[in-house]
Image 1 (cartoon, rainbow, N blue to C red):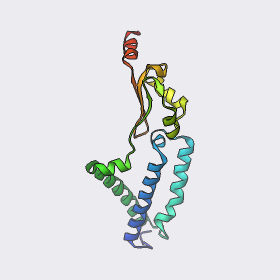
Image 2: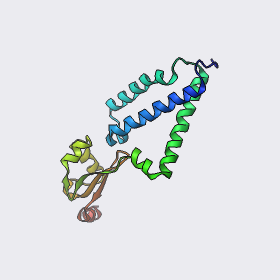
Image 3: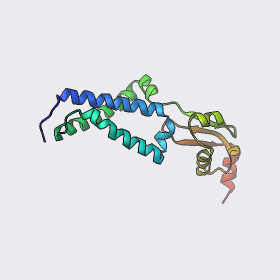
Image 4: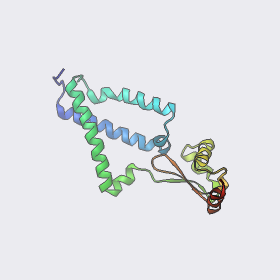
Length: 164
């Protein structure tokens, strides 16, 4: 239970290598998945995590090995967050820039396709912001965390204020 079958440094190195690979894969996968996981995304995440577990533990199945790996992942995650706050180039590498999905009441269909956002989901974000139609939006942005922000045109804001 407490006896490691591989050296501590190897567990730490394996854990960090898989963690960084996983972060890179999520970054390349796109913003949409970060904010709104679908059932397919969740299945992919769980199956990938399960398939990568042996690569992290190697031949070790001890409790101590699991504790070391968990600590490594939490410390690695904290360290990456700390470093991205202090080094803007790292933050830009890890966090994608926002994408404009609509401007001046018109959808950018190319941007929607590039970000894998279907029109139904984008229109749901409009309704969530209290707008009925894209013509009422000045700007619709897919944020780095996968959420969709909607900035209404001034005329839409005024008409909402008058509505009881």
